[in-house]
Length: 419
Image (tube, rainbow, N blue to C red; front, side, top):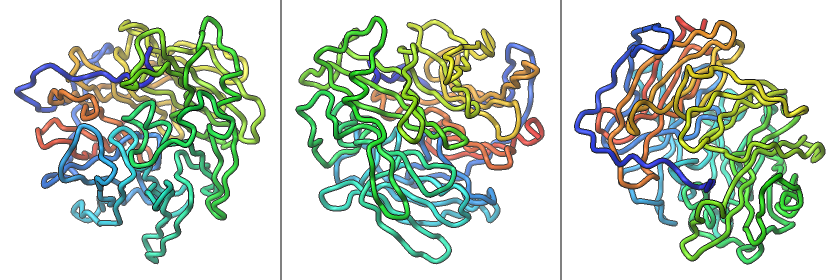
């Protein structure tokens, strides 16, 4: 499987109206209003949901704004960064802008854990990628010499990677504008997963690509392949992180045919010990933490429906959950402090996205809504819901283009179910 491949929406779609409370496998139906937080002019979205979109008070929601779109962001294309006050007529506050972004992982905009007023995003600072820390109360900005990816729960440390290399090998996930200094090296020892001290700006290598290339994987031959990492995420207790280790045999167009590329899940303790690769090679659209001991994961299986898996990071033991109940692939995460999972999944056709809730204790499933997304000819502009949960577990914000206004942000109150 090509770790950079993404489903393309190529089916014509004349109507794009959300249908609430579609029946699911259990027959449960609900009716929940959906509120648009943004609209034209321009497009608005947040992106990958494994970051803090809500502030501590669950009042402000972060987002991005873009006036026009290209197939891939050009080095000088700018997006605006802002926040929406959902308790004051959904007012948009402009916070800044950046040339360092993409449509899949944007500029890694997120609130600092534990802070009521500070947030961070990536930007380009001359000849290098860096990041900006902003305090929305004081207006004070701090510039760091490295970009960030995932933030530790203490709000003091971040994980990062080589976004130049990611752009070279997976253009939809890296940043344009700078060259990878290790472009000619398949598995460099000075590139990989980094830890960034947000207070000092210092960086240290946690795991190098050379280490990963030496960590064997059964039935995989990556001789002649270029290595990279993606999708970094700290565990809830901050003691481990997981990431995707990908490899690709390069061609002139930077795309690899089937069999010449792949990806696997790797975990490591935050002190660099306990480096483990899992026999989970067919990595598709997501992996997440269920708790600090288990990963929540769905593997790609050549188009077949596959169950959600809970994977013990110490033993590798796998447990199937929601088998046959939530078809299609998509993001899934846990509602804080509950056994409810929330996520989006593919529907009966490529342009359909389902938003659901699943209780891992009772097995109960509730379909919150089904959204029809307009077909696109470029996979970079496909729209997945990417649901983000509030701290109190009562509200979801999604990205959707079901009203034919391009991507916009919508608020859904699920508190009657989850609390």
